[in-house]
Image 1 (cartoon, rainbow, N blue to C red):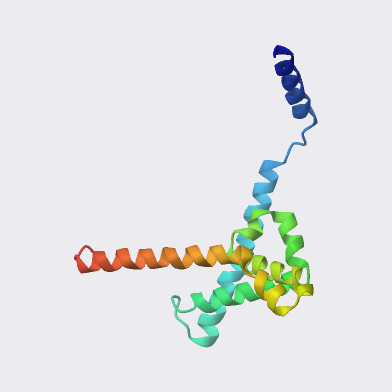
Image 2: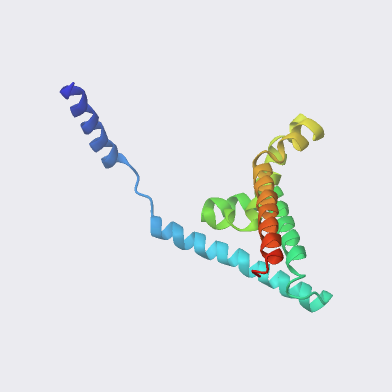
Length: 154
């Protein structure tokens, strides 16, 4: 029994020696700047809708999100967003553009199976849970807000 524990300890030491050290700080900085750049572009799109289409800051949010998701889907289709994701990691996955990338990536991957069973059946496998929990969370928050308004708390 002691011999097995010694072998396990030796293996763990060997594993630590051979493990490739990840540049954590460098990865965080890349994710920060790429994610920030995506958000900067989103803010520019918001100002575009405000300036050219007379949206208010509140009403420009929905078309901005739709535009950013469209951009990410377009870039994913051309293979550009995947390279951005490889470079920045979570920096490209966390903004709403990561959602668009997840949806269109599944569609592209299964396009050979046909539009209905391939694209339609697999497009929302990953994104479906995001949509489900997003809608459910919004529903719960709306009920809580309605109750609080009825009680006069807000």
